[in-house]
Image (cartoon, rainbow, N blue to C red):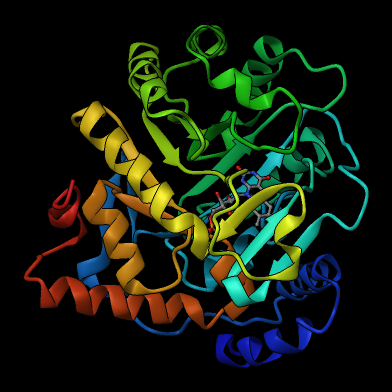
Length: 350
Ligand SMILES: Cc1cc2nc3c(=O)[nH]c(=O)nc-3n(C[C@H](O)[C@H](O)[C@H](O)COP(=O)(O)O)c2cc1C
């Protein structure tokens, strides 16, 4: 199958319960059914960040492939990088179903999955079995179990275990679906986690990024940025899903509990990204995520300060053909605006 054909199947999957459809899509991908993006890479999209080379700045966000079962097939769809997880130290089932909801009229999703995943050992073994080098940079997104977690022990242990297999590692302290997790974004607790990672860090280990919530108060961003810089964090991923429910939502599922993603998240996530860019003043690499569905959305994040971008919800709706379409549109917009490359556009509207 080609990515375009795979995208034709995607609307059929929409007749199924959202989680069942996701499971089928992932199995199809893992089996290699979605094919590959055959379009040649456009040099205007090539970029360097975190000491890594990216053929394009458009990545797959965490949560789509929590157990790293389809890393290579996802890279072959044309993503510039792929992030898998969130993985926790021990396997856990997550919240009871249903826990994933489409808000079709709003081009949005609400999820309260609760870090369902097969645990670190399985995840690490899968990564270890992949043929190297991988065709694109790979990010490991780590979190803590719902029961028996000790963040100051668990994040450093996960970092140390996965460092040999990842090009960057993301400290996820922003999922709304694990009670207490977002409290770890506070200055003191984050500092202790990052110090623990510093203690296990060995030269040549992958850079650390912190993924934050769009619901943080504006006043919390300055201390967060400074804490990250002080502890050697390389970048921020802005942002995770929101617990806010904008007035504009129309879908029946808008009252479901969980994190909202997709189009209604875009503006707030971009506003937080822009503030982080201003606060960081070049000291942190920023990854923009939240509501990207078009090349223009991607360029908006880049101009607000993102060196790289990611998406999940729009990809889940549109399927694999979205990836080449986004790349083509972003490249055309960069040329229209007279930019020689992605880096030249970063922060232009910050
Ligand atoms: C079903 C679902 C599961 C997710 N799981 C995770 C996760 O495990 N870890 C994480 O850091 N983000 C997770 N996310 C958040 C996404 O990575 C992303 O930050 C968010 O959806 C905003 O991007 P989007 O608007 O393009 O979807 C999840 C999102 C969805 C929709």
